[in-house]
Image 1 (cartoon, helix red, strand yellow):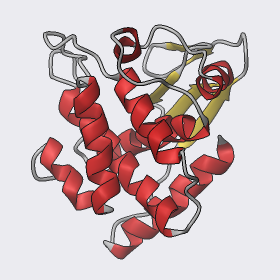
Image 2 (image 1 turned 90 degrees about the horizontal axis):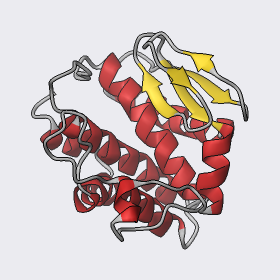
Image 3 (image 1 turned 60 degrees about the vertical axis):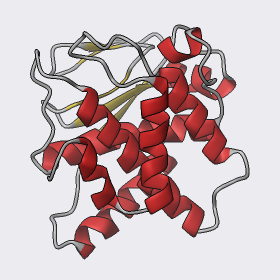
Length: 199
């Protein structure tokens, strides 16, 4: 995970530098199996952790979560339960890491809004799109393996949900897959502004 995050960070550092923006910065906590980490967001990072906490500027991903996702044995994903996608493979894990890193970028750019009562959906879809632009950079470097994009899109389908009346609705399976592909197909982070308006 650290190696993937280093690559994601290098991509965004180059991208921000080209746009005359300050270098992005974020911390990462790989939560060991069985461990509990109290975050500044008031939540506990456990074996199911995969989130960004803006209050301590840290991405929390549990090693157990990542291992289960890699092996395709992660259970309870809403889209997958409904027959959409299958979360498995190394690039499924990379997609999750790139998505959470994108939330840090939203925070640094002043467009991330995690207030209760406001819809999370636009920000989640933008984060999926930004993850897609990083995946495009992997392709451009000739490092994308044949099944990688399919693993990422299947994971995006698997984590989509149908709880449209909930402020924490993250987008339907198709919306999440399409947002990821918007970023991947264009390779242009500016294309991701459509999900939250001009940013």
